[in-house]
Length: 376
Image (cartoon, rainbow, N blue to C red; front, top):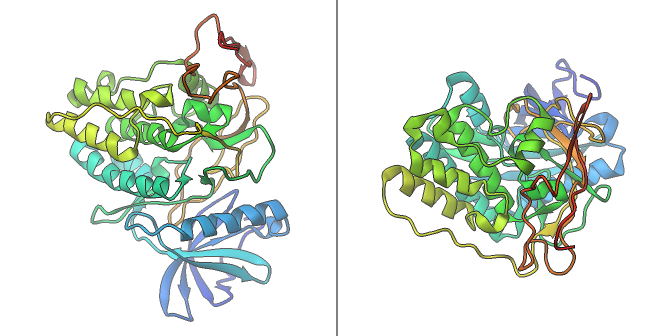
């Protein structure tokens, strides 16, 4: 493995490396034994060939610092971070089990009670992160670890951003996993409701066994998030029912103001829809200053084919290997209307119309041109 740790090189400072758990653009994750404290841990290592890059070092250290500030039962604890012979590492609690992506790949869709139980825990973790001022920005099945007893953890805050925080990458770029990326993310904006959108995508996949806008083609996925109506889960599996189907579609609304205001609110609505209980309408509140413009920090998972102008990358999960998925760095394709916040009173929904958006097909994929807006 280029720039990695050879299997026969089983010692890394005070850690005895046992087996690899995942690898990608932001490093490798190993199950390891901490010989100082006599405990098994998950160890995330920055690749040796990137350790000298100041940008990568900053992103890696920043992930450790961000995640270490969060204390929640459903967020994997960070024990600490440091360096051994110039190699940066993050030490985390080792979670024995699998991730949701692997479980879906092996066993197919989940029944609604099981899916809702798992994502209830993830929603609680997201609400805690949002309360601390952090947006995860990469909610997906491979970033949800599952213990054998069903206890779930949200992992990998490598591209999380705090409100008002400056970027650690080039201007005008956004990074994330396309299959679950909210429409506003493609224009460089994100707030808690962007994570709600991604969580709705995960619930859709958990119940249907399919990603909302296709499994393999990044161009198709981006086109779907930006231009297509939310897919209907009940069209894939009628047993899901129209009420739960409607809640999932609501969570995937193109306009963030039309989604549930929090991850917990979304899951409560989904559970009420499944059980037939009444649920209050979603709160449609907007942050005082609008979504914080975000730029990419790192990419996750092995990359698939990407459209022109995009750069692909990969990253491991915290304590388990990630499932295949399309990820990319994309240049901004849309800008909010001038005058006021991007999603304020003069809101210009992301959803395009034939008069406000054009899609040009080319051999390498689909390129979306900058759209005009009647509010400009």
